[in-house]
Length: 235
Image 1 (cartoon, helix red, strand yellow):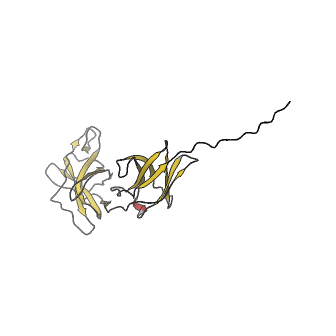
Image 2 (tube, one colour):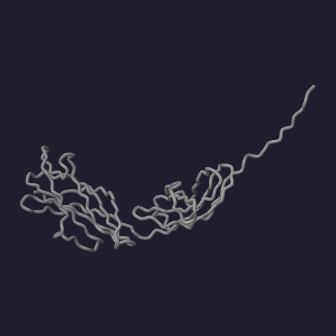
Image 3 (cartoon, rainbow, N blue to C red):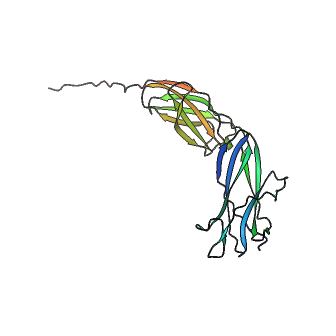
């Protein structure tokens, strides 16, 4: 029985809300063991670097020995992986640590794999602040400028439009946070005259902000200016 094996961890978040926090599922992947008496693997989790793993609480996926002699949790696709669900506290920034172990048919466990960690940031994300919004009669767009606190946490912003104050709103645009610097800007192409209401929402990795303050603009699309032509007559 191998006493140590290396885990290659791939994090894929799946979120679901609850009263106390968010249910987060992280998918892990690792190299398959080759011992003929392999029976399964387990993942162990702890919260915070100073805490300890509870080895009496294994998250225990079985594996199957394939023709190549390796033990896979998914023998059809010949991969090892496991989706580990746990609850993280809303409003909290915390680091979670994980190790994997292998076990044989007699219930003997290997030592820990390499340790991996993931910071889970569920702190409230501040709302964007719209600083200017104007109708551009040349481009026929409404142009927004806005600022954002804790911008390093933001992955993208989404613009939402409503036909009445307070919504409902529908998505009208998106801006990725590519480090472009503040103030940030978005535009929306105006289809015609009307009353339009907008909010901007910021999205971090795991949470989104509340709506920005609603902004309202009444648009009257101006027709093109008439041109005067001077005509000369020649006889």
